[in-house]
Length: 108
Length: 118
Image (cartoon, rainbow over all chains, first blue to last red; front, side, top):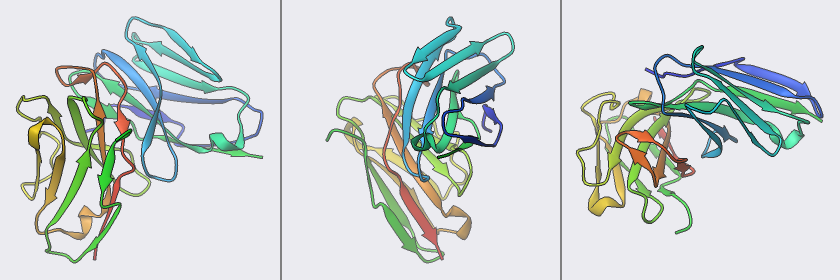
């Protein structure tokens, strides 16, 4: 079964607003990764955060990790129409599982 | 090649036929994963190869599914006697860094093979 669960399932915002997606998981992890998927084809890696890290930044992306709550969040600041995609978290423990994804729509 | 290559990109087959899906990982990547994604769903883990170790087949949904990886490089996913519920996008990914089954580096994905079983 899949380990990660994203929330919300779908999110629609205006261009320029911030988008926040959350991921919860069940077991201990080595690291957690976020991926982006356009049009149901290949996924593209966005950011990796290790279990001993609490926050990581990459451009307009900010990821937090709370291992005590087994949760992570992805914040996209100043969103653009081109950010419209599905976003998945993936947890790396004994197995590597992807969550169910958040579908983000950024309205121009 | 520069990235992970999958073929065919699209495959339409009739129920009961066998299909083979191919994945060419990034050169030098020792870890290779197969996932399945049904329409609008998340990724379902199928199988994982790491170097010369025995593959982790724990995600294969039935004995109709099998996969092999020759020479530590190219992998083939075979589905025998296809059923309509096998219709999905099959995604392959490779990674340069793993510790056991745990990727400690990013996964690079191919564009997937879209399988439609009529």
